[in-house]
Image 1 (cartoon, rainbow, N blue to C red):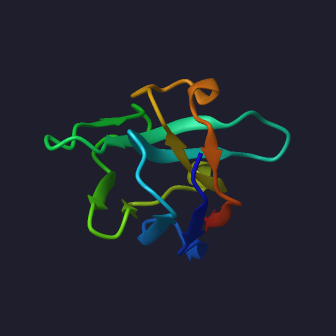
Image 2: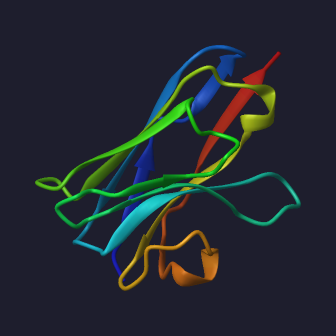
Length: 121
C-alpha cells in the first residue's frame, strides 16, 4: 500500500474544467480515480498503468471529456476534467493497486482521502 494525497477539487458551473492531482508515497502498478456520490458506492472513472506504455482506460460516461495522465518521476497522476456536467458531482478518490489493472474497486488497496467536485447547472 501507498499513501495517496489528492488536490484540485472545487465548485464550478456546467461546461467548465477542473484538474485533479494525486501524489503517491511510492510506486504502484496502477493508479486511477473512482468517484462516489452521497449514499452510493464508488464508481470507476479512469485508470493508468505505471508500465512504459502508460495504458489508460475510461468509464464510458467520461470518455472524450476526461483525460488521465501521469508523471512517473513524481509518482503523480492527474485527471483533466472538461465539459463538466452536474452528474459529475461526487467525491473523487485517487486509488492505487499493487497488482491489478482493473475497473473493480475491490482490486485497489490504496485510497486517498477524497476531494469534492461540485458542478452546478
